[in-house]
Length: 209
Image 1 (cartoon, rainbow, N blue to C red):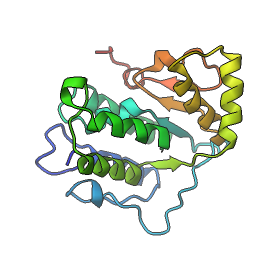
Image 2 (cartoon, rainbow, N blue to C red):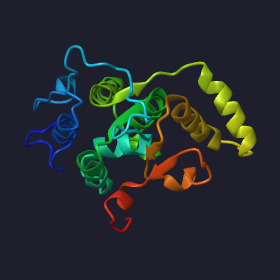
Image 3 (tube, helix red, strand yellow):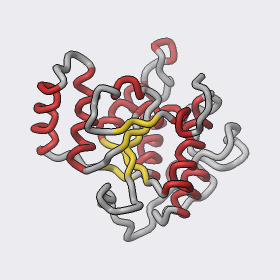
Protein backbone atom coordinates (compact mmCIF):
# COMPACT_ATOMS: atom_id res chain seq x y z
CA UNK A 1 0.00 0.00 0.00
CA UNK A 2 1.04 3.58 -0.58
CA UNK A 3 0.23 4.74 2.96
CA UNK A 4 3.08 2.96 4.68
CA UNK A 5 6.30 3.50 6.58
CA UNK A 6 8.29 0.41 5.75
CA UNK A 7 11.00 -0.28 3.22
CA UNK A 8 8.43 -0.49 0.40
CA UNK A 9 7.74 3.23 0.77
CA UNK A 10 10.51 4.40 -1.53
CA UNK A 11 9.41 8.06 -1.51
CA UNK A 12 10.09 8.39 2.20
CA UNK A 13 7.82 9.02 5.11
CA UNK A 14 4.18 9.30 4.02
CA UNK A 15 1.82 8.05 6.73
CA UNK A 16 4.52 8.12 9.40
CA UNK A 17 5.20 11.78 8.72
CA UNK A 18 1.50 12.62 8.79
CA UNK A 19 0.85 10.71 11.99
CA UNK A 20 4.00 12.07 13.65
CA UNK A 21 3.19 15.69 12.95
CA UNK A 22 -0.38 15.17 14.04
CA UNK A 23 0.75 13.68 17.33
CA UNK A 24 2.80 16.81 17.88
CA UNK A 25 -0.30 18.84 17.09
CA UNK A 26 -2.25 16.80 19.69
CA UNK A 27 -4.61 15.12 17.25
CA UNK A 28 -3.89 11.78 18.92
CA UNK A 29 -3.45 9.49 15.93
CA UNK A 30 -1.56 6.23 16.06
CA UNK A 31 0.40 4.59 13.26
CA UNK A 32 2.06 1.29 12.41
CA UNK A 33 4.11 0.14 9.45
CA UNK A 34 1.71 -2.06 7.51
CA UNK A 35 -0.46 0.26 5.42
CA UNK A 36 -3.71 2.21 5.35
CA UNK A 37 -5.83 0.01 7.59
CA UNK A 38 -3.30 0.45 10.40
CA UNK A 39 -3.70 4.23 10.49
CA UNK A 40 -6.42 4.02 13.08
CA UNK A 41 -8.12 6.71 15.13
CA UNK A 42 -7.69 6.16 18.84
CA UNK A 43 -10.94 5.33 20.52
CA UNK A 44 -12.72 8.44 21.69
CA UNK A 45 -11.11 10.81 19.18
CA UNK A 46 -13.77 13.35 18.30
CA UNK A 47 -14.76 13.72 14.65
CA UNK A 48 -15.94 17.26 15.31
CA UNK A 49 -13.76 19.65 13.37
CA UNK A 50 -11.85 22.34 15.18
CA UNK A 51 -13.46 25.68 14.41
CA UNK A 52 -11.31 28.36 12.89
CA UNK A 53 -12.42 30.83 15.53
CA UNK A 54 -10.32 29.05 18.17
CA UNK A 55 -7.07 30.96 18.49
CA UNK A 56 -4.04 28.95 17.40
CA UNK A 57 -6.09 25.97 16.19
CA UNK A 58 -6.68 26.46 12.46
CA UNK A 59 -8.21 23.92 10.15
CA UNK A 60 -7.06 23.53 6.54
CA UNK A 61 -9.12 21.67 3.95
CA UNK A 62 -7.00 19.31 1.84
CA UNK A 63 -7.89 19.39 -1.85
CA UNK A 64 -8.24 16.26 -3.98
CA UNK A 65 -4.98 16.87 -5.86
CA UNK A 66 -3.07 16.80 -2.55
CA UNK A 67 -4.63 13.47 -1.58
CA UNK A 68 -3.79 12.02 -4.98
CA UNK A 69 -0.18 13.19 -4.93
CA UNK A 70 0.32 11.66 -1.49
CA UNK A 71 -0.68 8.21 -2.73
CA UNK A 72 1.36 8.44 -5.96
CA UNK A 73 4.65 6.87 -4.99
CA UNK A 74 7.45 8.53 -6.97
CA UNK A 75 5.49 11.59 -8.08
CA UNK A 76 7.58 14.75 -7.82
CA UNK A 77 4.77 16.56 -5.98
CA UNK A 78 4.45 13.91 -3.27
CA UNK A 79 7.33 15.03 -1.01
CA UNK A 80 6.32 18.66 -1.61
CA UNK A 81 2.81 17.99 -0.33
CA UNK A 82 4.03 16.06 2.71
CA UNK A 83 6.73 18.58 3.60
CA UNK A 84 4.31 21.49 3.29
CA UNK A 85 1.81 19.81 5.60
CA UNK A 86 4.55 19.04 8.10
CA UNK A 87 5.71 22.66 8.07
CA UNK A 88 2.18 23.99 8.50
CA UNK A 89 1.62 21.63 11.42
CA UNK A 90 4.88 22.09 13.28
CA UNK A 91 5.39 25.81 12.71
CA UNK A 92 1.82 27.07 12.77
CA UNK A 93 -0.14 24.42 14.63
CA UNK A 94 -2.39 23.75 11.65
CA UNK A 95 -4.72 20.77 11.45
CA UNK A 96 -6.17 19.18 8.33
CA UNK A 97 -9.56 18.05 7.09
CA UNK A 98 -11.11 16.49 3.99
CA UNK A 99 -14.62 16.37 2.59
CA UNK A 100 -16.79 13.82 0.81
CA UNK A 101 -16.45 15.59 -2.53
CA UNK A 102 -12.67 15.08 -2.49
CA UNK A 103 -13.10 11.41 -1.63
CA UNK A 104 -15.53 10.97 -4.54
CA UNK A 105 -13.06 12.64 -6.90
CA UNK A 106 -10.18 10.64 -5.48
CA UNK A 107 -12.01 7.36 -6.12
CA UNK A 108 -12.73 8.37 -9.72
CA UNK A 109 -9.06 9.07 -10.46
CA UNK A 110 -7.84 5.99 -8.58
CA UNK A 111 -10.07 3.63 -10.59
CA UNK A 112 -9.66 5.36 -13.94
CA UNK A 113 -7.35 3.51 -16.39
CA UNK A 114 -3.74 4.65 -16.68
CA UNK A 115 -4.34 5.41 -20.35
CA UNK A 116 -6.98 7.95 -19.30
CA UNK A 117 -4.77 9.77 -16.79
CA UNK A 118 -5.92 7.62 -13.88
CA UNK A 119 -4.10 5.39 -11.41
CA UNK A 120 -5.46 2.08 -12.70
CA UNK A 121 -6.52 0.70 -9.31
CA UNK A 122 -9.27 -1.85 -8.78
CA UNK A 123 -12.16 -0.99 -6.47
CA UNK A 124 -10.63 -2.71 -3.45
CA UNK A 125 -7.36 -0.82 -3.80
CA UNK A 126 -9.18 2.48 -4.24
CA UNK A 127 -11.39 1.85 -1.23
CA UNK A 128 -8.31 1.10 0.86
CA UNK A 129 -6.92 4.53 -0.04
CA UNK A 130 -10.20 6.19 0.96
CA UNK A 131 -10.13 4.39 4.31
CA UNK A 132 -6.55 5.52 4.84
CA UNK A 133 -7.40 9.13 4.06
CA UNK A 134 -10.33 9.09 6.47
CA UNK A 135 -8.10 7.59 9.15
CA UNK A 136 -5.56 10.39 8.83
CA UNK A 137 -7.76 13.43 8.24
CA UNK A 138 -10.90 14.82 9.83
CA UNK A 139 -13.95 14.44 7.57
CA UNK A 140 -16.13 17.53 7.34
CA UNK A 141 -19.79 16.47 7.29
CA UNK A 142 -21.99 17.43 4.38
CA UNK A 143 -25.00 19.39 5.57
CA UNK A 144 -28.03 20.88 3.74
CA UNK A 145 -27.00 24.44 4.61
CA UNK A 146 -24.06 24.19 2.21
CA UNK A 147 -26.42 24.38 -0.77
CA UNK A 148 -27.80 27.79 0.09
CA UNK A 149 -24.24 29.13 0.50
CA UNK A 150 -23.29 27.57 -2.84
CA UNK A 151 -26.33 29.11 -4.52
CA UNK A 152 -25.34 32.56 -3.31
CA UNK A 153 -21.72 32.17 -4.36
CA UNK A 154 -22.42 30.99 -7.92
CA UNK A 155 -24.60 34.05 -8.39
CA UNK A 156 -22.13 36.42 -6.74
CA UNK A 157 -19.15 35.19 -8.77
CA UNK A 158 -21.10 34.42 -11.98
CA UNK A 159 -19.82 30.84 -11.99
CA UNK A 160 -20.20 28.61 -15.04
CA UNK A 161 -19.46 24.97 -15.80
CA UNK A 162 -16.95 22.91 -13.83
CA UNK A 163 -16.04 25.80 -11.54
CA UNK A 164 -19.30 25.07 -9.71
CA UNK A 165 -17.50 22.10 -8.15
CA UNK A 166 -14.88 24.46 -6.73
CA UNK A 167 -17.64 26.67 -5.35
CA UNK A 168 -19.03 23.71 -3.47
CA UNK A 169 -15.71 23.31 -1.66
CA UNK A 170 -15.71 27.00 -0.81
CA UNK A 171 -19.31 26.76 0.43
CA UNK A 172 -18.45 23.84 2.69
CA UNK A 173 -15.47 25.74 4.09
CA UNK A 174 -17.60 28.80 4.83
CA UNK A 175 -20.19 26.71 6.63
CA UNK A 176 -17.61 24.94 8.79
CA UNK A 177 -15.56 28.10 9.28
CA UNK A 178 -12.49 26.54 7.66
CA UNK A 179 -10.52 29.52 6.33
CA UNK A 180 -7.82 27.83 4.22
CA UNK A 181 -7.53 25.33 1.38
CA UNK A 182 -4.31 23.48 0.53
CA UNK A 183 -4.16 22.83 -3.21
CA UNK A 184 -1.74 22.63 -6.10
CA UNK A 185 -4.48 24.33 -8.15
CA UNK A 186 -4.52 27.57 -6.18
CA UNK A 187 -5.18 29.60 -9.33
CA UNK A 188 -8.66 28.06 -9.49
CA UNK A 189 -9.57 29.73 -6.20
CA UNK A 190 -8.00 33.17 -6.50
CA UNK A 191 -11.30 34.85 -7.33
CA UNK A 192 -12.90 33.70 -4.08
CA UNK A 193 -12.14 36.31 -1.44
CA UNK A 194 -14.07 34.28 1.11
CA UNK A 195 -11.17 31.85 1.63
CA UNK A 196 -7.39 31.61 1.40
CA UNK A 197 -5.74 29.01 -0.84
CA UNK A 198 -2.18 27.84 -0.18
CA UNK A 199 -0.01 26.08 -2.71
CA UNK A 200 2.48 23.61 -1.12
CA UNK A 201 5.33 25.09 -3.16
CA UNK A 202 4.60 28.53 -1.70
CA UNK A 203 4.41 27.08 1.82
CA UNK A 204 7.94 25.76 1.34
CA UNK A 205 9.12 28.90 -0.51
CA UNK A 206 10.45 26.85 -3.41
CA UNK A 207 10.01 27.16 -7.17
CA UNK A 208 7.05 25.36 -8.67
CA UNK A 209 7.71 22.33 -10.85
